[in-house]
Image (cartoon, rainbow over all chains, first blue to last red; front, side):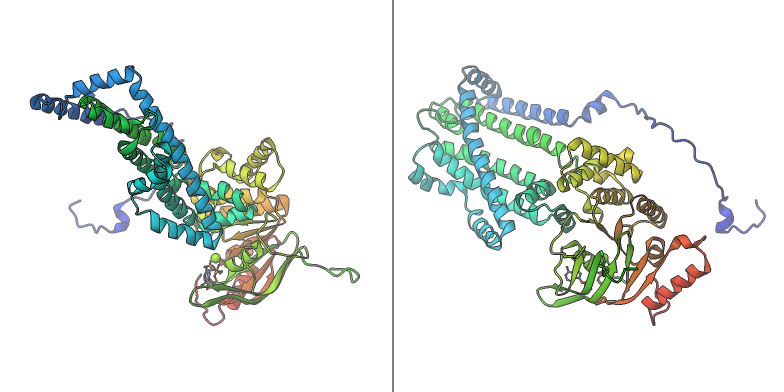
Length: 294
Length: 264
Ligand SMILES: Nc1ncnc2c1ncn2[C@@H]1O[C@H](COP(=O)(O)OP(=O)(O)OP(=O)(O)O)[C@@H](O)[C@H]1O
Ligand SMILES: [Mg+2]
């Protein structure tokens, strides 16, 4: 070895040929994780931990503050929450809100869907959609409340009107940009099967643009939920049965501040559940399964 | 061939075809005065350099583009719009519907273009998947298939339409050489089973000779027909037969008259 032997690239490594072995069934490699590591790997658990921490901070702060009119403790809030759930009051209010919301949300989706289908099939429809969204998308829904009051009076129709306004434009924009982004190849495949009109829209465009559509629905949901609560806070009552927003307003007037907090908590919980359970579920079943989103 | 009493009507008759693209700024002439015939059972190859208008001609036969001059007739009827009698396989890998599995893609094609029942369509689709050796992957979504597998599904899907003519736009262009050769062989075997009529676009001389019965050669942009040749690979016992090598040289001479060392 010590003798001078020139090393070239060619004699550095031996050449070889070999038979490949039959593929071994995939072997799982067991890696020992400590209990802490295993728990830490569960995302829900990490988030749950943060929630608990927040609750503890809340509790400590509120106990120290000792002013239940300004900032009730976490335990009081939970106790209040339990009471209004048991008495059925909160459940009724929530159902009222959700009913109004689903009417407005589905109307908004249908309106947005119709507008976009017209927009992609006719040139004037495109102009119409572009003009309308440019005009109305920046207009905050709450700004329409006084007008809604004037036209529809105090009550649900007014709220539905402003929510439809809040959801239609962002949903329409997303569906439209989704449709426009459908690849020319897929369109040609659809035409090859002689799909035209609504059959083309439903069998090619909608599934192909589903990632965008879902985004639109999510944004629309967030807008509608916020608008609903805001609108109810302003004038949610008709025939004594308002929704969640009204519940909060009412409890503030009665100085049941822990119930105000309970109402807010309910709003948050419903928002989180819809985002992280319902929409996640739809996503897993569709766009993630199809490889359109990861 | 044709008896004098009944004049022969070509199966696909492309006559003086001129195709243009209108962009906002100018008019691009893609092909100029292109004529050729496709006969039943033909494997007609459109061969030419990149940008000469091969895909454009195929799109016109597919009915996706209106000619500015000339006409295309299928069975004596002028082609006006897309239809399932002209099944198409595209060059792009995104031609499978991503929301449907390999099997569902074929089932969808069958059911949208015929009165087939669900059960019969599934059976038929399985048969076609088997022919392209993808039975194991019938439940895979396109995003989980390799490029070559996707093209095989697309070919199976297209053949399942039982179109009068099959239009293929460089379906193997973006595959590696080995896969490409294998797929050419597969396609040829499929053809031997059903003897479909096919118009196949390529810019590879080897592929043209391997697959074709007749080669239509186009000049660089704007595409014009510069030659038509008959080929029959099965007449030769080896791919290195001197006549084949001579044929290749002849084709490249025709295609690249003065740029002899042009490589495609
Ligand atoms: N959508 C379009 N708009 C304007 N011009 C186009 C369009 N598509 C193609 N062209 C032009 O038409 C000509 C022919 O294009 P085509 O796609 O048919 O070429 P090709 O022969 O298929 O080339 P390749 O082998 O690279 O696929 C090109 O010069 C191109 O510039
Ligand atoms: Mg092309």
